[in-house]
Every structure is written in C-alpha cells, then in structure tokens.
Length: 187
Image: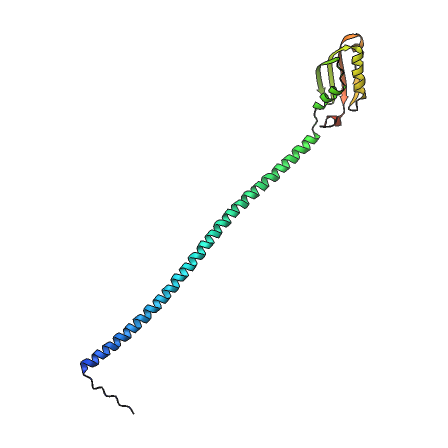
C-alpha cells in the first residue's frame, strides 16, 4: 500500500497546481495550434493544386475553343467548296450541252472565198440565212460547193435568181447546220 503525504504549504500547492494547469493548457493550445497549422497547410496546398488544375483546364478549354472554332471554320469552308463544286459541275454540264453559234463563224471563215462579202447572217433554230455580195458568180458557186462539202452543213439552198448575173452578184442562201457542230470545239 502506498501512502502519499503532501507536506507543502497551501500556497505552494496552489502554485504547483496552477503551473500544472497552465502547462496542460499550453500543451493543449500548442497541440490545437499545430493541428490547425497542419490542416491549414493541407487546405492551402489543396487550394494551390486545385488552382493549378483549374488554370490547366482553362488553358485546355481555350485551346479546345480555338481548335473547335478552327474546325467550324474548316467545316464551313468544306461546305462552301462542296456547294461550289456542285455549282461548277452544273455549269460544266450546261456548258457541255450549250450551243455556240460562234461555230458558224468559224465554219464560214474556213469555207468563205476571198471574193465574197456577207452583209447579214440570221439564225432560226438550226437554220442559217446568209445575205451578201459576191464579185463573181463562180465565187458564189465555189462557196456553195464548199458549204455542201462541209460535214456540219446540210440542205444548202441557193435560189436560182442569185445566179442570173455574172458579176457583183447579190445573193441570199440558207442552210441547216448540224446540232452536234454547234457544241464547243466541234469543228
């Protein structure tokens, strides 16, 4: 059995007890302070980590927006190119089927003798009506023969009244031009 005797005076007992409580209180205070500092440091480090990640996500978001806007622009250009290609293809089909009466001039340039001048040229569908002046009747007959020999011309009609005079012959003639010859590069 243990017996504890306390022979100290009451003032000293109270002072020792106060120091004990003070040390206990200080120990508890520092313990709580250290725990608070520890938790605060954890919270600050978590804040900095989350802030760093947020900045990274924002930069990724900005890059995504930039790339996405570039992709939208690229898609818009692709769509415009597709539409343009469709229109160009339609124009190409129309142009391939388009009749160019310029081919008549090319034909006349090839078959027209030097001594013949054409005053008027009229077209109606595939029929060409010519009026002009030939210096000689032989020149007019040569012109008629060359037209008949041409693969693009059919049904050449020269009225006999055009052949009555020998020189300075005013003439009119008509002929039919083939449809395939009116397309570009046919002659």
